[in-house]
Image 1: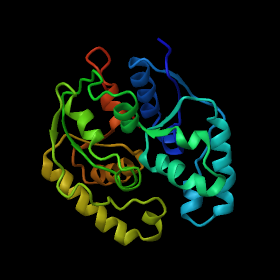
Image 2: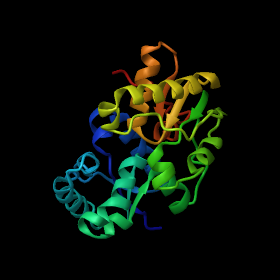
Image 3: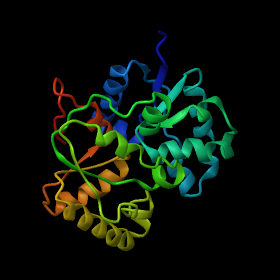
Length: 244
């Protein structure tokens, strides 16, 4: 059987600060029978520029994305934020390209394209899930991440109160509106702690960085782990906390 030729779109934040997530996506997709490549020509999707109003700077980045990922069956991103930028905004910058149409956030690729919810994962921890704004509202991934988490052996999934409320990051929003962002973060951290979870997971490292920073400063003991790292974890190759 011919393997799907999949490109990993790592995203700037993951590639720079959370490489374990990128490696987890690679292990997971290869375990599921995909042939995975990492195009070295990839760079920023232009979301930061676009959201700040620098459309002329975002446009060539969108064109570069289309060129870097041309020719692949699918492009998979461990980020609803960057995936949403490509699918929803790139067409207004450089037109609808094959790369735009073939880009998927990780959970929707697993469920909608590969047709799996049980990926053979093992993660013996109490976990709660934060649905990030772009995955929820822009890509509309719905309950796909939860369906994947419910099949992970050993994992105890707890419901996050006010789950659909924004964590307050929003990229430059957290810088330009620091007080509002901090208030939103405080509400989110309180909800996470109310679950009694050991681990908070999400599909975007940007939100996990924001919430995780706050939880760390509070010495809450709650770890933040990207969804991909949970799904890639097995009894033979279990998840190991990153040291940063």
